[in-house]
Amino acid sequence: MNPDSEAFCCCIRKGQSELYALSERAKLGLLCFLLLLMLGFLAFTAVNTVQAVRSFQQQYSAIKTGDVQAIRPWMTIHVISHVCHVPEDYLSRSLKIDNHHATLYEVAARKRQPVNQLIHTIQHAILAYRKEHPDLLTPTPAQHADRRPLSPTPGRTNY
Amino acid sequence: MNAFFISALQQYGYLALWLIVFVAAAGAPISGSLLLFAAGAFSAFGDLNIIILFPVALSAAVMGDNLTYFIGRRVGTSLLAWLERQKRFRWISPQALERGRVYFRRRAAWAIFITRFLIVVLGGAINLLAGLEQYPYRNFLFWDVSGQILGAIIPLGLGYLFAESWEEVAGIFGAFAGLFLVCLVAIVLSVLFVRKIRQARTNETLQLLESKAGQSTGPLPIPD
View 1 (cartoon, each protein chain N blue to C red):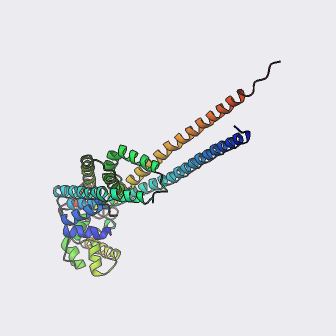
View 2: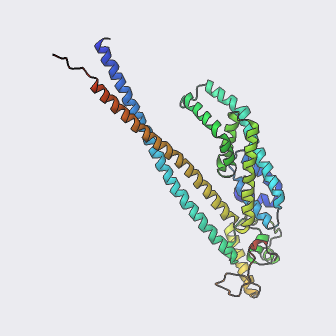
View 3: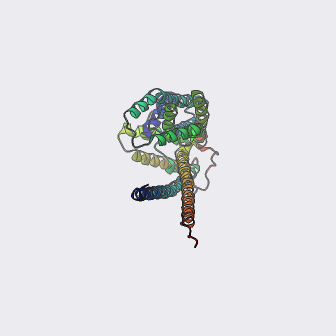
């Protein structure tokens, strides 16, 4: 073989191996970047999970104590009466709602008012009822120490 | 959106649940499992019956999955063939595509099963892929129904048990599912990373040995 062509071939081989090494390094760099990104996501989802658990604990304790803060927009009058231990008729009369199985989203949409405002009104109505009937109440323990014990699953108590 | 679906569930009951779960399982960006949590909760309050809810949810989810599978099988295969003919896949090499297909075929059962109840967000895509790859229908149906049984029992049961706080429980479940997915991807990436580093080290050692061997087999000294 001509010495010039041999040198040329050698040069090409060297170039190819350098290119291969470069692409390998690029792959390793990309993997490293993705791994770091995933670690970031992992931290984010871990924090998210802890927050979700805390939120559940808050809601669960609010439900157990019959706190009016436990009212959520998905609840119906029927559900609120179970959760807050207030008669359905009283709630529907004070809110002027006929359908006991309509969610608060739906009621708010019908009344054309923000759902938070509706929840606020319901909370006030429940607190007023509790003031009127102090012997029947099951509010937060901080307010009344002589509350009636709730069933393990408060939603299924027959009120 | 969720508010609308929950209101529909309260108003129309099982029919609304069936339709929404079917559309969600067919791949629409709707949270079907969130609605199942809500349905479980409403059954705890006596608005719906949990015994009826289970078959309704299961049939809707399986029908939705089957629809996407058959779309992938009928339309996807011919579409992919057409796209390959058009050479639109230049950015993915045929070897890489084949490697992906082999990998999917090996893990399809696991992928179908786990995306029914844990990583639900990938369910529609997996159904399409299974159809596109002509994954045997009997196997698909078996893994789909097995996964969907869990996919219906878990949210309905948790919704029923934690009726008043189902929204928060659904949040925890979603957060755990996200954590699981990210952990899975992080583990796969870590394994790939370690493999690459080992491979690079082996290559370096081989190159070093080659260069040493090249030096030792250099021109021999001419004896006098």
